[in-house]
Length: 231
Image (tube, rainbow, N blue to C red; front, top):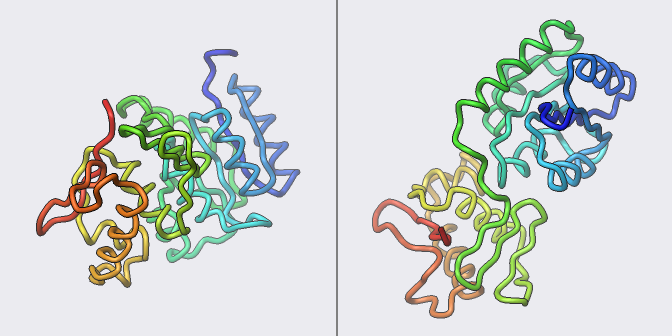
């Protein structure tokens, strides 16, 4: 069992939670369960799963928000379970990082088929990135939302952190203004580059030794930004 894929099930319906655990355990999977979004995020950070099976209707936060939080630091497949079957809900969940969507009630064989597809997809991807990003004196724990310069924790606003997490989670890649704005503020604000300039200036003041000559967050003129992490 130690080499079995680890599946995290996040669903507040205990009957469904137990049923999925039984089904997957019988098939040889290692299964963890959570009944809320925060519990699921905590378990995922403590023991990174190979797949997350996630209900949208959680008691403390929408499952789509859990997707967003997970995607800040992991690319493990996320399969959504939900009674919502509208195209809008499905597109929204997929846009926020889900890989697949299964509408309740669902058949056992269909669930197992989706799990097999997710495992094949994960196996074809490069190795997972570390959830801790280091760049010089800067350390960013993407799972626990902690940012430090040396031994000192850096206090960031929610938007500042979301911006930094998106950059660090895509370290080494050039991210366009539009992609950053869409991820951090939403598609409706994809053209509001003034938001980005203001928050980037604030981030650099908090993180860079010389904000005018940044080391961690580099500007790609006319395109966007790139986060430089240690190898």
